[in-house]
Length: 313
Ligand SMILES: Nc1ncnc2c1ncn2[C@@H]1O[C@H](COP(=O)(O)OP(=O)(O)O)[C@@H](O)[C@H]1O
Ligand SMILES: [Mg+2]
Image 1 (cartoon, rainbow, N blue to C red):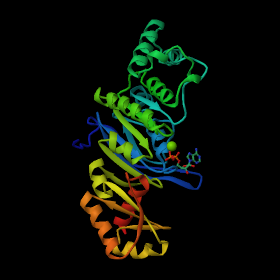
Image 2 (image 1 turned 135 degrees about the vertical axis):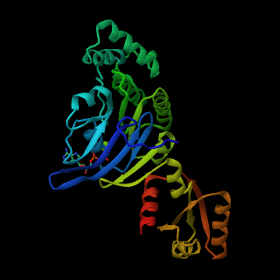
Image 3 (image 1 turned 180 degrees about the horizontal axis):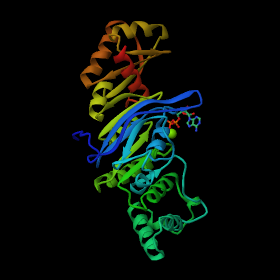
Image 4 (image 1 turned 90 degrees about the vertical axis):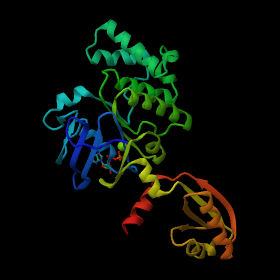
């Protein structure tokens, strides 16, 4: 568990009241976040909620309209050069060149950081090994799988050995296996002392990797908590019940005590334990509601928002 201090020396990233509008559209309406050195913060939010805009401000690619931020102890507005010296960024768009091999790409990046030829070769070889790409090093990136590309993107952002790394939706669009492989690499980076701010649309990803989760919606922070606390609030699993008769849905929702969500011929309920599950089925049976199909699934970002807004209401 991380103890949160608020000095620039223990907080690798500190943002207060960040605002940003594009034209008349307010995209960030006052974002606060703190990332202690050596920890991973997941910035969790749906598409269009302002994740990339926040990352672009913290990596000096975009000036905020208001608020302040320091990264590695340096002010993003006034000390851009110093900030850029300590950070790495893997953006949503691939930065690597399809026509080059993995090795050539990394050597190119090393050149951009003004490493000498021999040093660049050594750094590229090291990173290919570390990100499990050594066997594919001499193949063109065009032949890589989605997961291999993301690992190469990540390797490219680690060429300068940054202390603070920004990963903007690193696993979106990857299959479950590639996602798990990338998680392993991210855990290693964290274990080696890198501070990481990662954006994601997946609650499960935040749960797997993060010390702390900041949930944003419409450019506002709607939750800032540990994954465990967020999970306690959201519930461990979702029980999805398909009813035999759609007209039973309102009755089922009432029978389950108002915490259930009814839609079409389905009722969804957060369940905390097997006992709770059995109890729910008993209640429906008692109310004479026929259940046709039962399914358990892990909670999604939609469930988080439902719980957060239900709690606020
Ligand atoms: N350069 C820009 N000009 C105008 N609108 C933008 C620009 N960048 C982002 N937006 C808008 O800001 C909102 C938030 O975008 P973004 O930060 O990319 O969200 P996310 O990364 O969470 O999907 C979206 O509605 C997007 O269309
Ligand atoms: Mg984005």
